[in-house]
Image: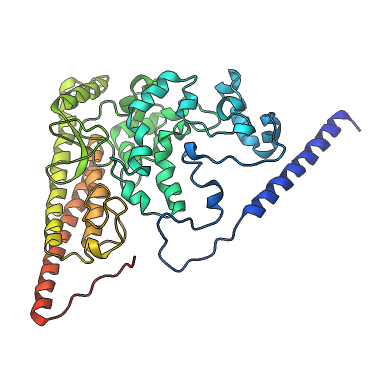
Length: 446
């Protein structure tokens, strides 16, 4: 038998052995996902399988390494059999060219880790420092997991474990996962230049930035020409405006825009902290000085193609839409707060499962939940979290239809519905009192 045939036969035997070991481990640890017949409980795993790894893949600092008998230091030899595409990607990467092997990022199996930006910072120090200075760097710890100063932790904590990982963890993990933007194991910087790389997270009903961009003239030119400003094309892309010269601080140049509900000009800079703007919406607060400094940065980028006068005007149009849209949401907040004061929300906050962040209090914007709530609050959630955001974010990304028909119009239609429903609730309350009927509360259980 020739040497090549012997090598081929040996590879087949090795593959079979690894597959038997691997599949046996999977089957042994697996569970059968049985149906449930009750509302999913908060903070509870729906399957036994989830408990083996927990959220370690989206939260690298809590990664639980597998226990693999016989695992040694020759990573490539085993993984060419077990995960051949991952090895192929690595072999086509700059890491491979520069001699950066598996142990450089993961250690060996005796102390296996999932890499974080700190790991990458060993070689990519400036990029890591820039990342830590921007909003991506607080996406998990402040915005989601801790419930600290951010605006969405209440919704995160109200979910069961699989939903926490698949939804919130899928995007907010960017804080500690560089591969959110340039995927493993090629880690190709050019991949992160494409708007599609941002689209995994910057899309959907709560912030459709990729959709805004694709329907703007900037996005249309990119689609037609197939390359962006950084590659010699005419079209600015996400990185042109938000990562100038490759700066990994994605907060550069943002004024009233930004994550979640954006910002408003007040008396102090709250950083990642939230304040209530004059309309009662929780968002970041900035000073006039910060606004002017960051606006100058963005205008300087626009001036690669446009005059200063044109750039300042177009951005001020979006500013006007932002403050006007916030005022519309503020009208709805007044209506709901008035109903709450009169005990007319059904159910009232004290009669429903508590908000994980604020307890049995009324919570509008910020940590407001979209479940186990009153009908009028559910309607307001769509107004402030979806429509309001489309109106002003669509404007800053220069998408006419998203600004108007997906933002401004449905936002104002929902305000009309909220005011009408409030009127109905008051009339019903008056009628029930006149007839001596005790109002029946919506029961979500505890």
